[in-house]
Length: 525
Image (cartoon, rainbow, N blue to C red):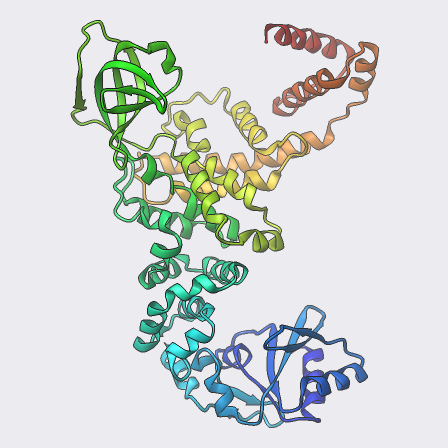
């Protein structure tokens, strides 16, 4: 223990019976470090606070209904709670027996009224006393149960699990901040798959994450070896234990249920109605359909599995035969057209029910907007480097292509976000290795590409930071370039200078040439 903690324990023990309890004792028995200390004292918190201030500590009272007196120092924390002298009664009010083991701070004696030490050794997670009452008192204990089970590899005792499952809906009454905090801890464990499977077994996924539950059993295309649910679990496990990446892994394919489709053909008259364009009974989804209004067309498209009255257009052209028909394409591909956008929209819906922004911000790893951006862009790497992954792309322009990719993903119009690009690459890697069919040599190409993109990411950031705009400022002043034109010209130059592999001298000759090209493009627009 830290010297500060040892000293504080010794001083408090001198004025009152003082027992360490909860995670402090549990982790000590497991020979694991415990950063925060929990204890109970027989004197009132008001009296304890008086002594602490006399000892030059600065305690803080936390909580309204059930108050805790906390002391913070040097990144460590000690929490004090009162008890009436009855350790058995105190133990029966706690969540699980492994957290109801007491250590007498004065003597070092272990007091174990509910046999929690034995449960810890047998790896059995058991509620204290009546599990129905424990979960009724605080439903967040259901999620704590999941976390402890996964973290410590413990089997949940039957009555405890049954009570948690029967009272799952009580979690709806818990503040979303608390639910989000506990879910975040589950998702950032070493084995998030075990946590998600246990949540699913309890019914949590069906009730609180129905958008995710729909992926169970959803068949994918020929590039995948797993259904959408199993693929999602694997992708989540493949990500580093950062909440933003774990959530991105869970959310990245949510939209596949919405847009899952099979290739087909439909013929008939295209007609405009209040709700869109239709051919017979089918609503046609595509761009510039007004060009074909009131004309007979042939559509090569994809009919949605779960909205069978809708067909997404892949190709459309006029059909002079004036045929009216529908046919599945024999051996046609399975599609998930536009699932990235749908996934982003569904992710936003889920985030509105939780408060993950609180945790994301505290961890300094981005916020909800960055999370949505990752979900919506998770396919961009594969789409940009599809030829290279197949061994078909030319290496001549690859470095320029990579610099363009990271710049377009990292530049937000004001700053270059190195971390966002790095997160995107991590998510892409997790998705790539999430149970997909691979061509010979494709994994080797992918690993090399990711490594090079990470290096390019750093190089592009460095180049942007080193740009000197003094010559441009002078040039703009001499040519009366101002307002929006100044901003647009500067950003055009910035991209060219950063993306180029060669060092470009920002002199008058270069600026004259580039400004001429810029004005030419501007006039065409």
